[in-house]
Image 1 (cartoon, rainbow, N blue to C red):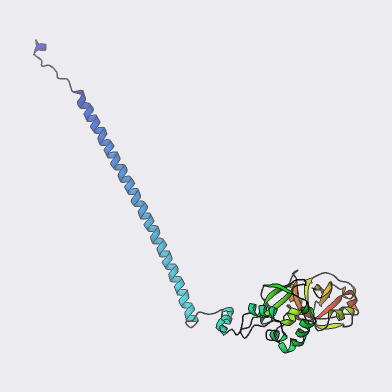
Image 2 (spheres, rainbow, N blue to C red; image 1 turned 120 degrees about the vertical axis):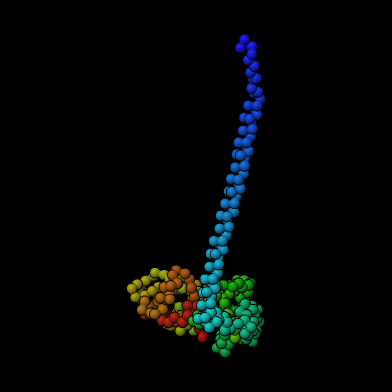
Length: 307
């Protein structure tokens, strides 16, 4: 009886349980997505803040550098009386500006000298025209200048002798050895050094090598350090040896400088390179027979003598 009076049990709906689970899972997914979005947004903000910090630091460093440079500049102006100080080279250039240059520049003077046809034209282009005039006339009338045909010329490195600076040019000929043409750099007027060009000496090499002249007050040669010690110059402790060459004589000569000579240091600084020199020489006890000569004076370590 009791079993018949009991009301029947209503079964629980299974789909409801699944809906609740699905809703819970959806809610968790939504929370996870929102959390990831916020995390990425936070990372971007942190990156922007870090970049802004770096820009600020860089700006501050740049500002400090500018202030330091400006301070040094102001101090310099204060110590120099408000004017920028000049180095010796700057002062030299400032004291002789280009507008004060008188006459053609050195390269033009060199070209005009090469192309000159008369003694009068050349006299206007050379240093010390009264002094070198007779030798220059002989050079172009009955000397090497008669047959030398210029093919062209090109610039070399600048040179200096004492306080005198000059531009150097190599002059090439059709069938003769080249010559060195030097033109002084002087705002008062550039001039050719004819003694350098002609390799002038006080006596001829024929007289020197034959023994007719036992000394020469002035010769122009190319020198290079050597190590030949024999005959009258066999004492290496006393002499410094140099090989001397020139287009004006066929063989190499031996020149010797006393190690006590004040010019020794200048010669030693040349090392093993070949360099031009203007010298006074003499033979010692017949040393000309062996083509050996003592250097008695050094006029210039160039073929251009200073004023």
